[in-house]
Length: 77
Image 1 (tube, rainbow, N blue to C red):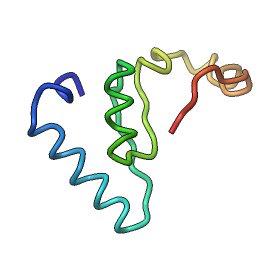
Image 2: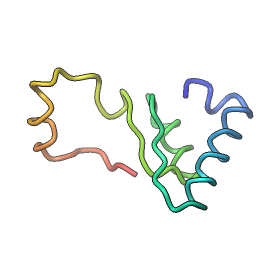
Image 3: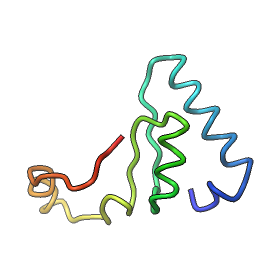
Image 4: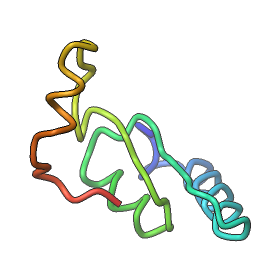
C-alpha cells in the first residue's frame, strides 16, 4: 500500500485483483490502507472494501463490540 501512488507495478496488481473480483462477482478487500490518497485510488479502481490505520488502529478484543456499535464517521467502500 505504501507505494501505491508511486509504483506502476502496485497499481497493476490492484487493477488485476479488482478486475478478477468484478469478473467473479466477489468482494475485494485492500489491507493496510493508511491515507486518503490510497483509499481514493482503490475506490477508483473498484476495490469494494478496505481496512487499515486510516479507519482505525489495532484495538484490544475488549473494545471491538463497543467500536462496532458506535456510529461511523467515515464512509466505507
